[in-house]
Length: 580
Ligand code: GLC
Image (cartoon, rainbow, N blue to C red; front, side, top):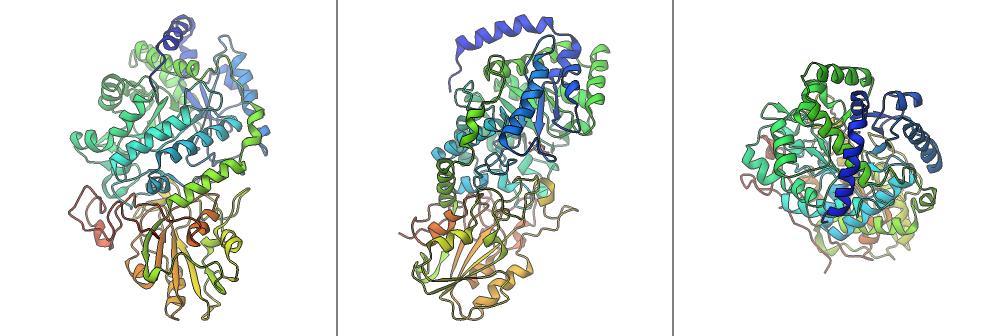
């Protein structure tokens, strides 16, 4: 999207008029981002000149979408009542639909969209996410994550599109365009490419760990999605928790200021991650080039007071503060918030609409990857007399959606508007469908067993393998191995469907099954899986990651990646079978 130069020059003159009127406290206020509860009282939105409010983990702004809108409208009215009346940005982690709102359309996580490879579909999904985010009171989403995962031990592989820089760059373009459009459209939001930079390439996949890539590798493998996003005018970039060769990405002046802002001409907001300053102090992060700080969880006073003193002592220059505030004001003008600061109640009726869900169902279908189909057992005949469905993942919207769904760490329960995969199977099958949830009632005479296995939901470092808090391995759990054994050992034909945020070491289980499908984390429209299993639609998905053959593939810092042919994967990047 070519920037509208005329509009930008008008905005620049507005900022030139406004900035000199601002006190240092008002400028530091604009650089402050807090949660809508716990961190701030309504009164403090005004007295502390807050620039942005976010909703993440924790208490909902209300029950209905209108409650959410009214809560944020109240904050906005308070912000507009201040001397200069600068409107607030409202940010949310809507990373696969407006996933914090119960009832929103939930898309496959980005790894599934990566498997679809369908840029048009990604753009549509982002556009719907933007609308449902606006409908619940937000004008900023912290998405897309454009990490290039080097190691499946990382707990956030599913948030990224692919290990392929090229595929990630293509889908980043689509995602930014879908979210932002022409930016001032009240049905669009400001997007955020994250986490800058090297989040997915840490040694051994540790969230917030050390990334030891050379600058050449960063330029070649990790920067292209950011370059593409900046060309499209992405409104914000979020810095990453990892260090890059020992320097925190929250204080990396060379990459944030000299590369991202100067060389790549990024003119939007660099926002910190959650208390990202904690390692190096907020002044180092602001001096590094961060413009807005997530001063959450009780850090408000420390941040504002610390920065004020730092400016007074000359440790942080007023030019740096002015650059940060100029960038924040620029995006608020571009979003049209000065003219149109409030959410539109008219949008509420579109949340979770049939039309939105149909797009999400298409994304589910196109995300599925067929890894094995012995004797063409798939597609299943709808008239099969007896189908047995196995596994708790078959009948739980929460388990099929993964982390960042309803709650930060996901949910293992159903949620509003979602369809489980079992419901989808029952809708299409004409014969008997038996649900043997934990393979405790083995149906030896079943014509086929559809066995669902996978990971329970996780987010961020909770999904790291080998991280001290993790109880994840890259293998299946014993109970899921039992599901397959219980049926395969009885000679029942088995179709195994893996619901996971990443490829897992499943070589033995793939050998045991007649058909094996990687379904990733499909989101609310579980029936999309059934539509492909029964052949209403063919498989289209291709592996967005090389598939490991054994845990030995992870002996070094990274996993089996398509750009590193030192490890022979079980299935290569781009692999995927089809019916025809
Ligand atoms: C988290 C995540 C980031 C998210 C932010 C706000 O720690 O790293 O992806 O956008 O905090 O919730």
